[in-house]
Length: 206
Image 1 (cartoon, rainbow, N blue to C red):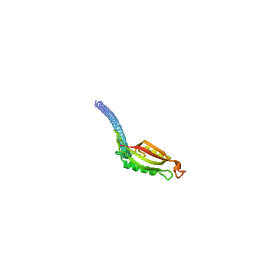
Image 2 (cartoon, rainbow, N blue to C red):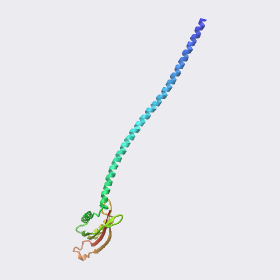
Image 3 (tube, one colour):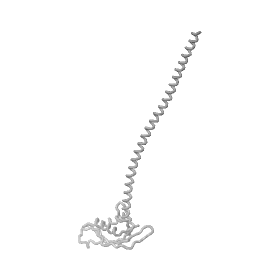
Image 4 (cartoon, rainbow, N blue to C red):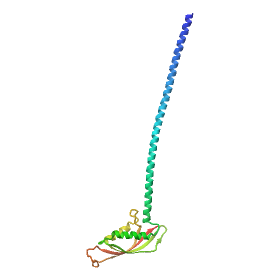
């Protein structure tokens, strides 16, 4: 009997050890699986954080670059706006500005007139300004002696007036009277054909 009891007790202890070993194995497997899952989540989270940091850095760099471009364009647009406003003051001034108009006509005369290709403004007479609801006009009359070629250039200049690029005062011709000099009246028979004319012009302003 004592031997039988010992065998039973011994087998029970062995079974308990096996069961305990199996339990430990299962528990270890569960812990390992759980830890592995957590590590994967942690690893993925680290990659996401790393990616997000790179994205934030890229966005920050892009934002800084765009801000710099914006500031540069803002400055350029500001300069362009200022230049347009300055040119507009010459082309379509706030007042009749006849002083500046006279100066510009003197410059135009000086640029065109040559020894054998004359353009001479003998007189400029300003009349009273005419006001309308949207704009005003400064009428003026000029007496000019010019070569035929310079006469064409004068007409072309008035026709293309109002250009912001050339800064030419906006004008139009309301009337013109022409007189062609006879060759017999000219000392130099090889000189170009001369035209004397009286032109009535309207110079516009705000």
